[in-house]
Length: 337
Image 1 (cartoon, helix red, strand yellow):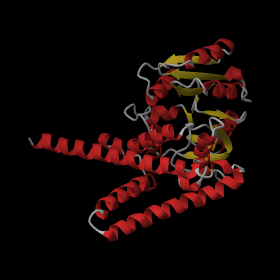
Image 2 (cartoon, one colour):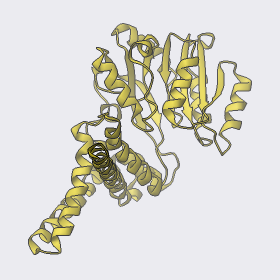
Image 3 (cartoon, rainbow, N blue to C red):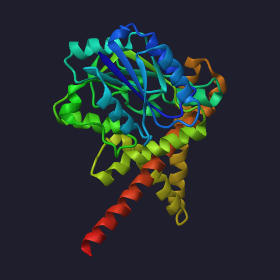
């Protein structure tokens, strides 16, 4: 028995596509259960899930009254019957051999967690949605994230998209940290590796991921991701690596240069140079993407998507750092009194 856990909330547009891809899996359905954990959706998500659950007995719905992802994952794990648990995202759909290949490589490499690569596709056929998808398929947009950019062969990594775990891993390492509203996968996989676990990325395992469709929503998403990169320090949890901090350094540097430019033309010149280099780099990478996609209409939107990712993430991290700093100071002051 394999248990699929899908946390979701207000995913009326995409949950059907996700479930359709699981129905088409080549893995025997008698040995499969799909647990969709719904966080009190306020749109038509619940109706869509209910329609599939009524047709396919292996699809089941559970409630997540507290709405957040780590709680949904833990509800699923506690109620899962399978010896292997696969965490899936409702913003994605999966190749028909996704489950069978996860199991194949889990056994072949004796791994504790196996994941694949994601191919980012636009949620809608609008220029904004396309530009966002393209930005997340570029080195300039995502850095050295192997599960986004791909890999030529299986490799041991620190974390993966989703993840296929042996259920006994959760007995050994514990459940997902329910304080971690974002970044719970990274935090869990860090604990897993510290306990001696092995995490494998396999390029043959493929999912198709659909990010936010508008620049505004994309900005908000990245701001929140950036915030949750730093905020867990309040719980004495570190989930970031140095590459996660690059947007923070970039944005902080621009803010400092902007402040200093009011007092010195020298710093004003450095600020203009830094912004110019960033703009040139954005258009350079946009130029590398657009001809390959044969989609020249979005050429000027791709740099905007890059900026929404980098600056949104950086400002979010800065906000998290300010929050942590003031709370830490407050804790010390309270102890001192």
